[in-house]
Image (cartoon, rainbow, N blue to C red; front, side):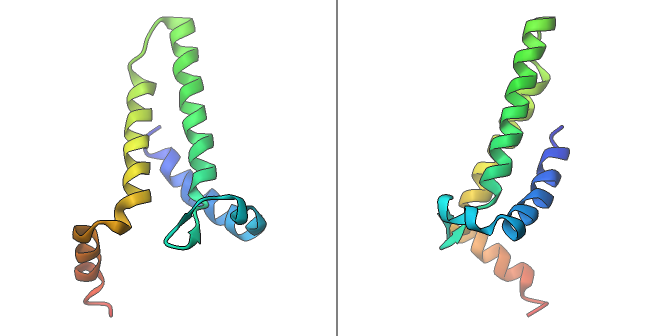
Length: 100
């Protein structure tokens, strides 16, 4: 679950950005660019919340899906805010350095 949802997000973000670009005017911006991953993240988070509720209602368990949601939310927060962090910019400059 934790590996599938971020991969799906990468695919659906591109589809949304290419086919539904007018939606970008309604989304928050990150670095002056509409943040299309937000749409997919809301769907992915909703799926995990729904699965957690279903799992609780049917089996009285709250182990897997809340942990997956916590990990996914951590990934989302980092991804949405990493561009502001000096250490991340330094890492990216170092990583891209041999290519540029």
